[in-house]
Image 1 (cartoon, one colour):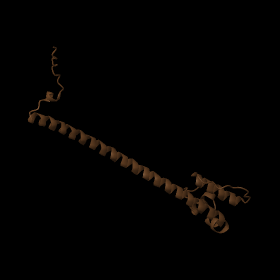
Image 2 (cartoon, rainbow, N blue to C red; image 1 turned 30 degrees about the vertical axis):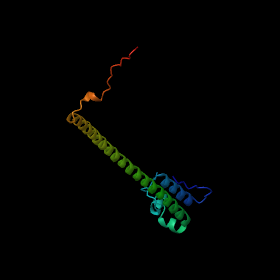
Image 3 (tube, rainbow, N blue to C red; image 1 turned 45 degrees about the horizontal axis):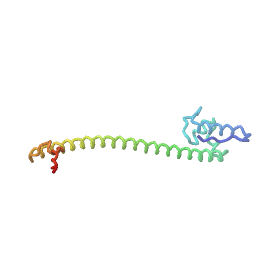
Image 4 (cartoon, rainbow, N blue to C red; image 1 turned 180 degrees about the vertical axis):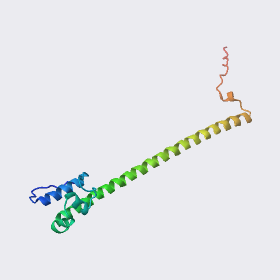
Length: 143
């Protein structure tokens, strides 16, 4: 939020204009629609526009400068918000893709297991042939 100091202004018209500028920058307009342009500043200050353009061009220029900076900040914020929303969308899409890949992986693992069992059955290998068997002990001869 931009705030223009009233400072040592003694002219009541200038003080009114600066107060109106501060209300517009704060987003609390009392008389205007709140847009940051010279016409709305004049309405907010309760003055004719020519007071700003002819009698107080320094305040008009100051207002336009601050309004441009505020608009640039808003545009940057909107852009970062859009980027954040885009990232959230991509994240959701990636999560869905990961779930799809996990389901496909489970299907492939099941198929590989079934193929291994079929291969073992067709090649004549029993399932327990791969187990370790204990061999009988050899008898040692004693003379």
